[in-house]
Amino acid sequence: MRIRFDKARYREDAIEKAADFYDCNKSDAAAQACEDVVEIVRAAETVLEREDLTLQQRREIAEEFSTRVTEFDVELTVERE
Image: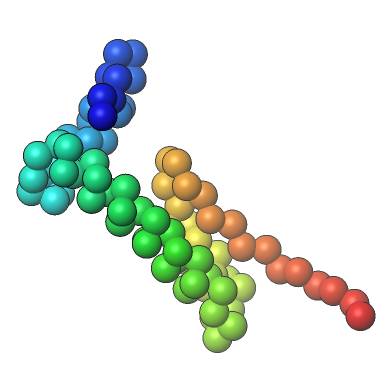
């Protein structure tokens, strides 16, 4: 796989940060980060769905997990049956 860096320095920076984080080469780092992100996002969604947390706690957790690319949002839904 080839990743284009032209006019997108942030891509190269992101992959270099991942390589440093995982202490491996850029190709392995990109693959590991891709695997991790799916699991981390699923785990964050599971935590945010917990009913034992207050709305404020959920919003704080959502803010902590939000990134430049992925944003978590928590809303209070009121329904009438």
